[in-house]
Length: 380
Ligand SMILES: Cc1cc2nc3c(=O)[nH]c(=O)nc-3n(C[C@H](O)[C@H](O)[C@H](O)COP(=O)(O)O)c2cc1C
Image (cartoon, rainbow, N blue to C red; front, side, top):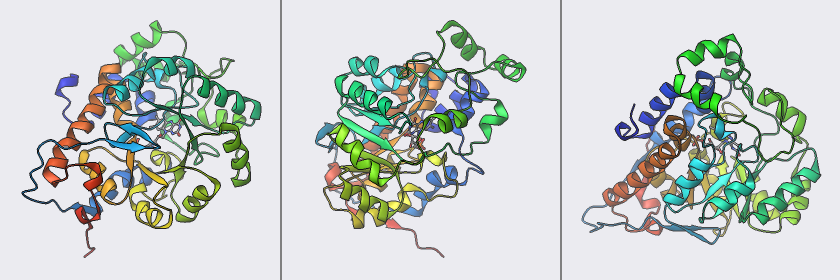
């Protein structure tokens, strides 16, 4: 499907499916175990309705807001995602430029396939650096220093991945990073000639922030070898001291964890279950928002992440007390469907739907979107 015929994120998903190799599409699209959380992240938004105001006279709403003191033109940021050159040769360059195009924050993954330095120099809008905790603390320190030197303004610490979730589509597809090409991949490759051509013509895909090229290995084994599952609240103090700057804890669903995060000094919390890729049957982030908003102070900013596909999803989260939302698959579908232009198209679709829906809602600014606009559907 041509990009301009993609009028919503689901269309981009279909376009990604038809262009990308099956193992790549499934890596983006899939979740853990039975994918119950993956589905619920999206469907949970159906539990809420938007109660719009009439005759509010809103004709050009202001979608801008601030996050950790930085002004952004839209109430969303781009969630981090690993290995983007697998999806399209431009890799993380595509979504980083897309974020700049709509005036928002891009967050670069620890396991990115384009380096901290390249992305740091690429765009002018603020960028956050997402960290996983390596067993090798020297490597953690080195990455923090590199991110700071490259102009990344905040540390985005992801803590819902002590080990990799059980994403069953990946072993079925024989998926590894970098991809290992066997008979199955060749067979599926015949159906994805554009992806295969790009893949064969581009340099080998690696984790660009690591010095040594890794050999083809499943993500599960890589994470088990390299990441520190024993990292805990006591270690966080050390980490925040090393970073000494604005920080966000990503992957929280419980109110008590949110409170603890605030206590140890995080400035913001990303309510997230990793897009349903980690612990299956964990709750949808939007459903966790009210309890967390209730328990933390107003100065702790909340970002809801998971299942955001339309402007109405964004407005519901804002009305329920989020400061902003974030997402990954929408821009990844765009990237896999059409590179940089596809990633830009995805964020523009979401931005434009927010503008349209704020007019329909009767909200002039993001600050105006309060709890009066949202109601939970009463169960029959
Ligand atoms: C292909 C893919 C790779 C991801 N890689 C990372 C990562 O490296 N670090 C991280 O914190 N989250 C990662 N995530 C999770 C996202 O940051 C985000 O929490 C999640 O995708 C949000 O759900 P959504 O895709 O429905 O918007 C990844 C998600 C996807 C789909």
